[in-house]
Every structure is written in C-alpha cells, then in structure tokens.
Amino acid sequence: MKQGGYLLIEVVAIVFLIAILALTFLDITRTRRGQKLAHELLRQARKTVFAAQAVTDKGASLSNIDEMKILHDIVFPSGIAEQLARSIHRSYVADERAMGKTEQVNPSMAPWERLPADLRQSNIAQAADIGVKLDAIGAVVVPESAAAPAFAFTDQEVELLSKMEHDRWMRERIAAGWTYGEPRDNERKIHPDLRDWADLPENVKDLDRNAVRMIPAVLHDAGFQILRLPAS
Image: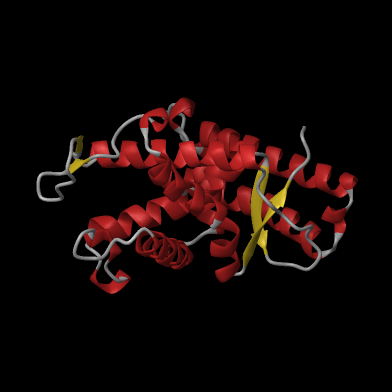
C-alpha cells in the first residue's frame, strides 16, 4: 500500500507543479496576481502530499513526512541532482584555491571523478537541499524562462541560508561519525568546523555564503531558475 501511496503522491504533486511551470512559461508570474496563483498552487501541492499519504498509508506518521523533499525529488531527478552537485563542487574547489589551499592539504578538492563516494554523496545532499532552503524564503525552482522575473538573494537571506547550510552539513557529518577537533584529520573523522555558526571564523562562514550566492548559477547550469513567490 505504501508504494501505491507514494505513486499517488507523485501524480497529484506533479499536476500542481505542472500548473506552476505553465504559469511561468505563459508569462503570468510577472504579475502579482499570477504570483499569488503560483503560491496557492504550491500550497495546495503540499496539502495534497499530506492528504494522499494519510489516505494511502495510514500507518505512517504525518510528522515524519517531508513533503518539500518529495516535491523536490520530483523536480530534481537523481541525474539532475548530480549535475547540480558537480557544479557545487566546482564552486567549492574554486573558493578553496582562492584561499591558497591545495588538494594535498584538503582532499575534498579532488576532481569529481576522484572524489570519495561519501564526499560525492555530501555534494548531492547539498544539491537536494536547495528546495528546502528556497522554501524558507518563499521561493521555488522552475525551468528557465524569459518570462520569469529576475531573482537575487538579499543579504539577510544569504545569512539565513548560509547558517541553514552549515547546520545541515553538521548534521550530516555528525551522523557519519565525525567529531569536533583540531587539526582536521580525515582518517579519524575530526573537523575544526563542527561547531555552532556563531563560533565559526568569518573565512569559514564565507564558504557557506558563497555556496548560497552560487545557487542561482548552479541552477542555471542545469536549466533552472528561482521564482520568488508573494507572501501568503
């Protein structure tokens, strides 16, 4: 029953997502009325995910269902998620080189093809989290279209999403058995950045800030862009 439930979830969610994308291509989202309609469609898509799950999989706890992740997985199939992850990795390597670091000092700078599986998966997880971050500021991902209005993060949004990314990365690392300590030791899974955002040096915070600022370019590489929705 659970498998059928998720199939129904995907079907009904896709209907709403197609409607949102259609609004974008039809140049309707340039108007405030059109943006409100897109926002309402997204809201209904979320509600539908919960309702479909409740009906088709009564044994599941609704509090454990991440509807934004379900919707994001529909928009970003695994192949596209990896494409976004590769772009994120290229940006990270460029930032590290700008700070004078090399692959010998930081093995995470290795080319994608030589990157360990856990680090590749970490980049893919970061790409998969884009939709969650955008939801936090009332925005969604849509296919690129000249009809969609231009998008730029505010300074406040960059700071909020950068902290979100650091918190996500910390959860991921801790779950993998890493602990705080200096100096960094990949063999013993020790990392000096496993501490609260407020305690990080500015140059480390800048890595997350740059990663957030690069999201529009990362999406552009895959043929997507960000659409800001009006406050409900």
